[in-house]
Length: 361
Image (tube, rainbow, N blue to C red; front, top):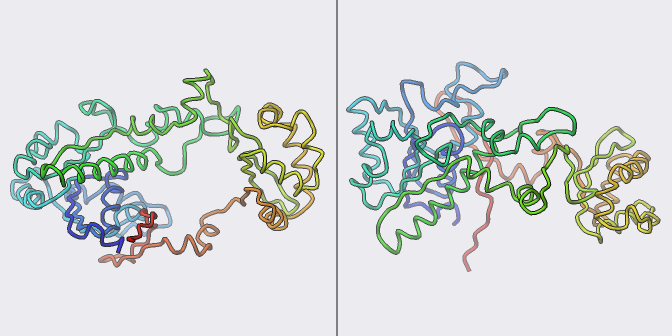
């Protein structure tokens, strides 16, 4: 079964906040034994205290902590204490993977750097997350800082309005994916060589590597991406929002000429196909405001549900704007919820992070 894919793998996690723990949870979901070493002097991972006003301040966990720490065994140690350090080293001695976000100076001082640990366990894969490409740069690297430094914050929000931070720590999650890929490559390399290795990734490089078309729009066309709300710089109407007769909003994601043709026929507006300002995607991007005024006039005539039914029937990509209750009202989303008993607290509930399907033939 997919859930037992790494049942013989042992992972020791010396990481806190989001990126490193997300990697640990990936392996936990696939059956690995994941031991999370938490700092007992700070009462564990800092995110245990990152609670919403509606959460019980007396509970030992927060909803934020639960989002990336399902399936692990927490061990509280103070690595500055000789006895506790010895316990941690015992776990590492039989580990396959160590996940760490130590500052390099702290790792060397404590004896938990890659070279020191692999001297005791030659098969160990040491996976290190840092904020910046130069690991010795120990500036704090919280996600909002990286969103700003890598250009995401500048591009996110509405035109002529201040920048808006993305509502999840996306840079942390992108770095986690990079580190997972590196660890999987290192495990494959170890199968052939029998020896471990060091895998390192920085949040900054992970962010830059994920700029995708926004980076190439600059690198190839000299275009500086601007804040456009939900709209797309290269496609129209894509990400554009329209208010329906019941006040609810509809999003269109028309990505091809065929889809625009189907949209026009669905709206009983085939004449739009013959208008020079709307006939091609390039023209629609140039005349987006005029197009949206026309489409808004049409969508305001019926309720959201009516439009969704018609658009889906015609194969036009569209969506309603859902809040969290509406998201998890969908059976497909409910199927991704994980639950786990938690000592002295309500059950941990979070969303599965491994959603690929692996089928043995």
